[in-house]
Image (tube, rainbow, N blue to C red; front, side):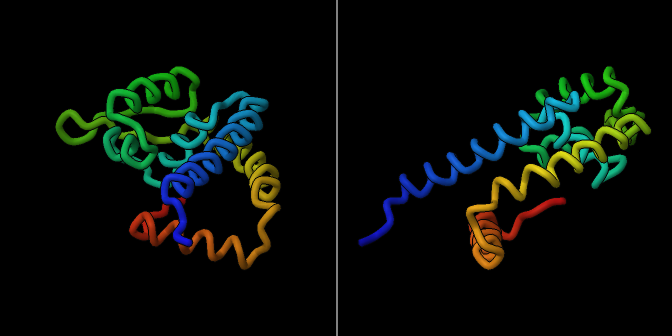
Length: 140
């Protein structure tokens, strides 16, 4: 019997929601949201990236990332500098690097719990299948 694709899509969405809720809750305990931490991670992976590039990487609109960037600057985690034309480049401050490291420690604890129902070979297969669905797209 064929798999009902709507149920497959819903299962993926539920897994993502479970991941986001657990990660956000754990990260909030150290003073950062999942969205903020993901932005710090993206900025760290691509220093001097434009706001547009960071918005794409973090699955946000340009406007949403602009607002988030302003909050990251206000928190003291990011500094912006003029780039070419109207482009704003982003870099982590020392405080931003510290928060990123603290968040990595949190995620290193939470992610194994989230994926505990799967053995290592199942995790590898899941990663391969999701990469295939998304055209091989992945990011740090």
